[in-house]
Image 1 (tube, rainbow, N blue to C red):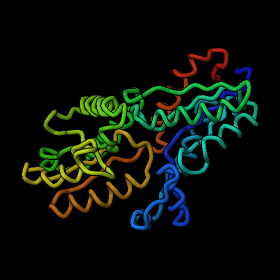
Image 2: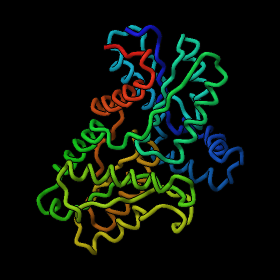
Image 3: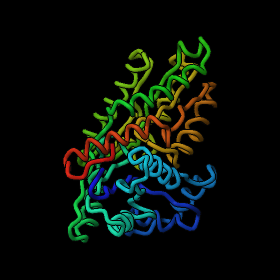
Image 4: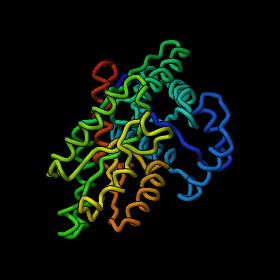
Length: 315
């Protein structure tokens, strides 16, 4: 049994809860610069189309599931909270809550398997918050894009998707392993793209898909295509009929929960493009609180805690 409580923060980007939050959310993402009206209107239309983003609620549910997995006896040895970069609950608020409940070691787990430029933002924000708390230290989990339970869960969800195809669709189906695009000029973007490729390749091997049956694509860019990671998923989908493809599966390998980039960019924009071209569109079930995914997060925590052995997890 632990001699003190271990605090864990599940770190995510953040999201708005309703229309009123959109201007403030965009201003925070833009580091204090007010968003132009057309950007606000575009984001508002997307949120309304999908009925809002469940990201914060899902992250909260993931935190509760992870706490139960790590401390099933509810001994208080582990406290898990969600924390957002650009919306409530903020990282600073979550850190203060953990410290107020007696935590002196905090483990940050970015809910993004591959290391990206955002990883530095999570690290910096957590370190800054902890630095204002005397006697409190923090650890940040590293990339976990090949964690076995993570890969296994993605594979199980993808297999379920493939099982929905008939024989003719299966023979020509194309799996698009998709991740959020980033500007090519951002430091660390090459490592991010490499790790996305590693996740996709490992997953394809796990489900037995040949090299010709899958490819890595990127989505949700907000700048000129030449300046951002590609190819873009919509461009690739547009070219699939000429290749004889009858079905397309958009399989996220970087997103850990349903949110706007999944519910709109994939299930609206990509689906509409695919179906307009006569393609069958499928997307695997999200990770969300899938038991295998919670197993993956628990392993990430345990691996990170190895660097702080005086704060053991419950058996």
